[in-house]
Amino acid sequence: MEQVLQNNRGEKVLTAVSISNLTIPSFFETPNFYGIFFFKEANGHVTLDTKRIELKSNEIFFFYPYQKLSFSGVFTGNLIQFHPDFFCIDIHAKDVGCQGLLFNNFFGDALLHCDSKEYEYLFEYFLKIKNELVRSELGKLDMVSSQLKMLLIDAVRIKKSKQLENMPSKGNIYYQIEKLIGGNFHQHTSMDFYAKQLGVSLTTFNRMCKKYFQNNFVTILTLKRIASAKNKLFLTNMPIKVIAYEVGYKDPLYFSRVFKKYCGISPKEFRIQLKNNRLI
Image 1 (spheres, one colour):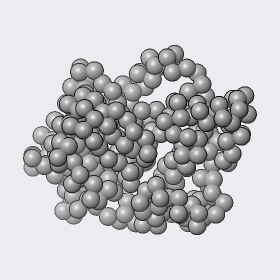
Image 2 (tube, helix red, strand yellow; image 1 turned 180 degrees about the vertical axis):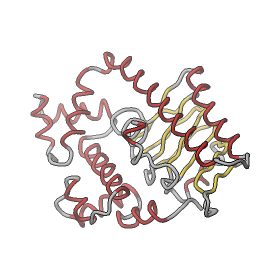
Image 3 (tube, helix red, strand yellow; image 1 turned 90 degrees about the horizontal axis):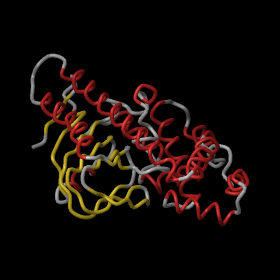
Image 4 (cartoon, helix red, strand yellow; image 1 turned 120 degrees about the horizontal axis):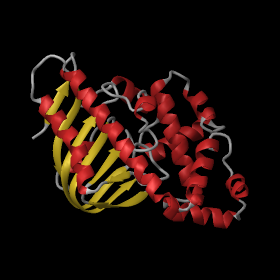
């Protein structure tokens, strides 16, 4: 059963609901929301922005507005979806630390792989949120927001601890590539720059990108630039052409075409949908 949270104007800003492979397509008719998917049992794949990821039981997945998303296989679980007007990941980035780690994580795995104990611990937040939604007491909005924030903080802590555990097995080169692209995407668009920084050939560098991140260099760079643009579109009132320049595009029209290709919506419409519209 779907539980709904409305703000003081009667607008739906958050829902908590059970999902399965049969019901999940209905939740993406209006994708101007964040989503946290709890997969208690799963056997299949999730494809996010061209990256295909194996989906297993006891995993949690984090969706950022207007990412291209599809599921295949058999699964059951639960979903929290919430509009940025209620809780904005970008605004709370410094407090929570989940932007680029849980949400919009192109370099690592977009899924949070949990053992059964970790999963149940994080799922308790879902149950607390759902229970709060059926109550009619004072402070419901603040209580749900607080539980959501604690869920994200604990998910970040678990994810970071797993990164430290996996660092030796992934190898230092993985983190070198991530740091290089993350720090230079807005000014260096040539693969030659990154290959030279690592002291490898262009062919070797592109092969590394595909090996570690399941995408070629151009796709990784594009996704990183679009993620940065989304953040600026929502948090600032900068003209779109200025945002295009800041994330590395010299031609604003070309930026708009690329943005729409990957998001299914223009930069202008993205700004309107996230700033003005609620879930419907």
